[in-house]
Length: 279
Length: 360
Image (cartoon, rainbow over all chains, first blue to last red; front, side, top):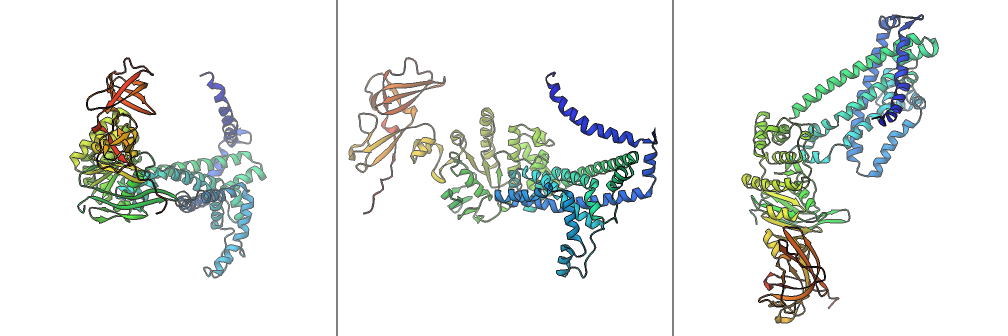
């Protein structure tokens, strides 16, 4: 026991220094106004309809991003893990997938600003292909922000789902097929339920990252759309009101936790119902 | 055999340059218990996966009940499989695992659960219906896998080394249970194993495979007493393999023993491998014994395992193992001179293929 203590001390100290203390600082500062303890900051946040509108936009963008990531990422992960037979090709695909994570968000978001502009590559292609009559506005719309976020967050969900898929024993799918299940039935009743935990963790990861994203929305919003992290950034960097900024941060954190918890609960209930239906 | 349940005709299978199955043909009758026996890499699992439909042979046909299933996907073949590591669905209860097959065949849920319960009762696990696979022991999971495979009432059940993950005692018990179950259900079993004792104790017919080729098909007794090849003789049980050369009608001269082995009709100079089981080699205290071919040698090694003793004797350049019941090794020390003898009738001769001639 005693010998385990020093081993335990390092991670505990790390956790305290980098997670617990900053959190306590933010929480305590959010509960101070004008040098005295007060709930005034929270009243300012919660009683203002503007904040609720921004919160709604933030969660709408994050929700759409997450849905798009899941819909694109799942087939991509399935393709990488199950369809690609060559090990070299799979490794190349994974590297291509992860490589953008090594460059800065700012650079990549600027890239999208160029691509999504009125005379950008995307509009040129869409008009050229006859899909659009005239260029569409992406910059300064929620769609533009969603496109940028999906691009940045897609690898997370592909990796999470890919790991879960790779962990599904192929013998289980053989067994399902052997017992008379069509390939689609096998996917619906065996493969998908077994990698659902991986998909859920990917969804939670993408959603929380999308909710807290600052750079991409800031660059692609063109000043026309505000998401919550921008409000927080303003308070800390330009207004220097750490108390009010802290209250904004805590509000976003709590709301996100509530939503993620709610989604997890609904997901579990849904998985149970789906499992029952399959039986 | 047009009335065979399973009829495999000259199938071949390659994995890249590796030739996994070479011109394999096999018939399995209704209700038969057939063991595919061979060392790892002999192609027995490949053959099983071809029958189940997980692999597609390069050429040849597989028929089940007269219907050509060679190109059918697994879910459309009228058979079921017990997998080596059971492959139970971890996210479903035991009952749902077993009911999975009937459900996929369009049986209503209530009816499917009823059938699953009956199947579980048959393997003595009806009390575990509500539990999950991870809560069961290896032996119990094995039974669930069995119940799940036969609940569809297939005519043919494939078993891929189903007992290999169990410990020895449990394995012995499951062998007996499996044999009884097979007789009770009347389903034909094709059972893959690398354990020759397991194959001998359970199967009506044993298919010995080596390097993608069927070496011999026969009941356990035939395969043990009259192995068709040197490989079979060596793989099934223990064997003393001795060289033999025909000396016209006089008989065959073995590497051991002064007398010729009577053997009629042999070509002069035909070469043989003589198979002599250790239990047929007797240790004598005099140089001659009536009806035995005898020789003199020296004790090389004595291994006493309580129930039986194996004495290895060096006779000339050959080693001859003799298995005796009980603690028979008393007084036999390495280096001691000893006489060995065996009955000519116990020697099984395998003709060596004629040496290749280089052109006419």
